[in-house]
Length: 44
Image (cartoon, rainbow, N blue to C red):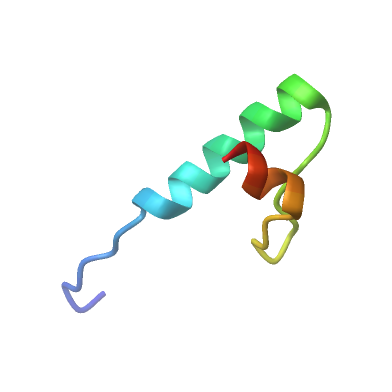
């Protein structure tokens, strides 16, 4: 680590969104590559 900052807010938001929707709807809207499908974009 060279003392550089890392912004994780957008990544944590995506992880939280995926977990909440998976629990509520039983479906993942973000695939393993981190790409959100059409329904996921609509909900977000």
